[in-house]
Image (cartoon, rainbow, N blue to C red; front, top):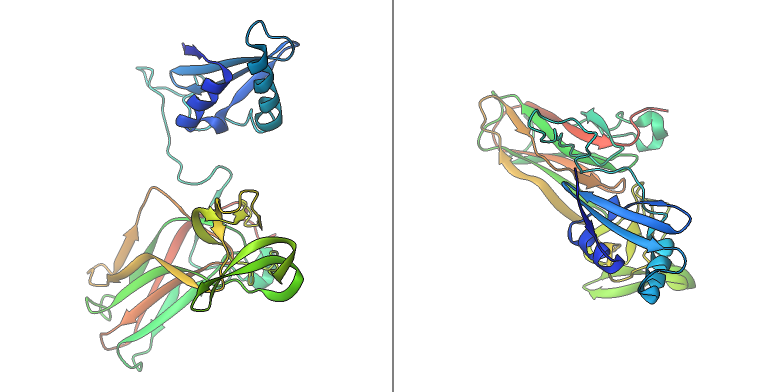
Length: 324
């Protein structure tokens, strides 16, 4: 049923790391041993760690026991994802039936034509600004209008649709979708702050954590002031699944920065509106994670004369889809 591959602890960790299986680590125990294992169908990697005196390599076993109990034990035995369990559905030839889900586990579908009303709390989900832009024909051309939406908690955006009146928009007009990450705002609190400033030049500042002895304070609980930006593994802050920002235990190697300047990234950049159906439909197989401090902008630039209306919706995923 499985090709069992027995390994020592060091080799076991290396195999799981190479195949991105550390998060799938499982274990059972009896009075004398831990049986640690992970599946990579049709293979099963297995490792035995002795709780007391090992029959061989006592020093290596003791090190493995200490590391497993301190670092891996509590984080293991989670629900196995991405593996073809023998209990799962199969085709007649034995091949596993796999369904691709683009969202993170626990996220629920939220199809919306609006952002959230941040001031209303949970009751404001889906009641914010509408993804709709209207021109009345009196604007000086070319004219650009933008609508901005935000969400109460992190969402994952997968795809969406954009529609317009084909009689009033054409090839000279275009639209964009972008994500704006505002700059973080710090207050000067010399000697007592949770952050220090690193001058990047030209007035740009990088905020790095301080142990309440820094020059500035960033209110990490206020997402109008604390805004994470991607750092490609060179940052100083951590952000959890709920969007909460904390100083990283691995400064300089974390996933997030905080800076004092705004940045904008484009998901869709200046796509022409010449489609005779008045429709732009996106269908992708990955999601883009959006922090609550970030703003999703829909922008339309109209160069053709006359009034016209364009609108759209987003397919997103979020943990809470209620209004309570």
